[in-house]
Image 1: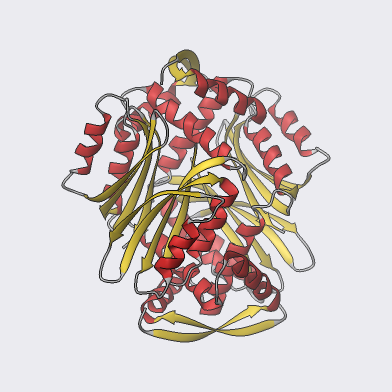
Image 2: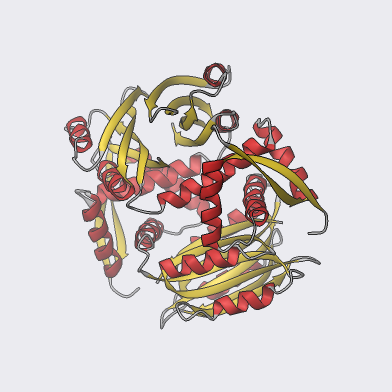
Length: 134
Length: 134
Length: 134
Length: 134
């Protein structure tokens, strides 16, 4: 966040007023901060469309921990040599269901493949791969 | 597009360089134009999250025109008194399938309901409701 | 829609009850119809992730028809030799704004590129590319 | 996962073949398992469209841990009385950036509000709220 540059932007008055109202509601303290976030999201989305790009991902899954063999399979898949599982978080939702967040690092294409394999396992009820550009 | 206002925005140098490269690839001729589009999209998305908001929508559907009674049902649903069907476009994709775009005006909640009814009709293969804020 | 095959599917009772309630609200007349739609959407999404896949797309845009030279540029871009513009629909939203739907056929990657070029044009306020697998 | 019911579904032969190929690639071991996942996703999405519905969410954020006061603000917002922060996971991405996953429980509307407040904080570079129906 070191090197800041200041640029000028022209916007229609109406658009600006509406934007100011929105970002106030969201809790932003300056327009620059809000616009920086929009720009970052746009760039991040763009980068992640390349399957070869390096990314960090959070794989979210809800599963029934009574499903036989699932825990072993989940751990196995995290030890693939093409991605790198950094960390994971486990939450007990109720008597049956667990929420697990697995943080992976690797290429977008590879992460998506691992994500699909996890989501297709018997006992996994819901799942989503969240890519974030590195 | 009459009343323009000029504001100053501070961005990290790296972020700005990457953004400039992206918008050049996309064909933008100025940063202001690209940032205006980001702001508009953000505002539009925000507005459309309210089911009472007025919106224009394009309902896209691919359907088999041999499906009995479908064409009549599609027309009927467009004559609901809660939404207003403005116009539609029909494209013959192949011997079986048609693509139809129906432009609706009304409240977001109502448009979504009509959209769901259309997509659930027998013979409709794919469909999507595209909301645009008015 | 000629050759139907009948398969058996096992579902948890709760899941089935909730699904039946949802599809009744949506207006489906049979589970098979609703499940076919889910399967089609899934397959369509999968196919469209390949930039070389052939697709039909609806490009939606809202633009200010007073923007100088925009109409010409929009027509020009539709005459690229890599995509094929099939048809278009124009709706007058108010004194300034028009909604235009352009139906394109071509490769996913190419359609996205054309879509980006259109959306980056000065005077285009909102836009979206909707891909549908062919 | 106790009470299973078996239903019959009619699908076009082509559709079925293509679906079988897709789910084999994804690693599914049976059609029932793959269809159950599609149904669950659909239901989950439907439920989360109600702002009053109870949900579990994973808020993902990337932030610069040098941003003054951010860590305190992040903890404060997790102690709101309207949502319940269950757990969190922290990963050091590089010298500056941290990835944090915060698991929240509460009403969809409230979770979205907290998520927006977090994402608007100075120093938070990227963020996303992932809702999962409970």
